[in-house]
Image 1 (cartoon, rainbow, N blue to C red):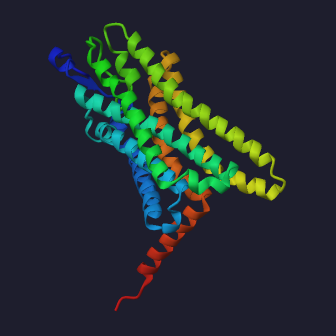
Image 2: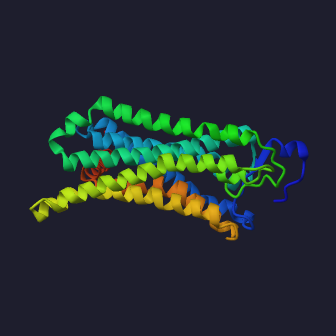
Length: 321
């Protein structure tokens, strides 16, 4: 698609990017993306429904899992309109206010997910290293405070970004490398110095993802030390098995995030398709895989899902009068 130059339009609009050179195939490309989005929505809603309706799952570990599912749903829904809009309607134009709003939600929810993963690591640390105090440490009130603090910290740190971007004049192409708006991509289009945005962006990452990942690593170092002190080999395996799902969620979140950051900062000469694929991996793989991982590796969740399917199957097989 050729983008006509229009100075008044350029001041109010960015242009999102689908798969360049494959515009004729966007209809077909949308099929796997629709399947991914549908799976993300259904998978996370299933996790939320099971935790909400089963009183035996009203425990700290599952409350944090519900927070993770809510965050993944938010990330999915924040990108869905623009991604499918490009594939279905070739709707590449996005107004600057809408772009900045999408940017705010994407980055805020990404930081919230990092905070939730840290909370889940604290949950595992208390459960394994100090099990007798588990219920007194992770009370419902404290869990609510942890959830609210995750949202507030993330929102307050991301809130300045749209205002920092708003002060720029954008005199370049206005074409973004992705199907949604990201801070690093937008600031590259500015005409003036972006040093303030660069420094503040690094500050936000260090204060959130940097601190969270360090604390997660320390919590698992302490967990490993405690587990190795357990005499029974069977008990060691049982203790570590309760952490596998969370470790997978941590890797699914941080590895794509680090990969995308490296591509943005040092991959200017890489093909555009690499930037595009990394961005999709970063925002779609964790919400897609987290419900699957927890459904497979968490016995309680798996059993409830099987029961739900058996119940639905029994209703369908019930003879009609």
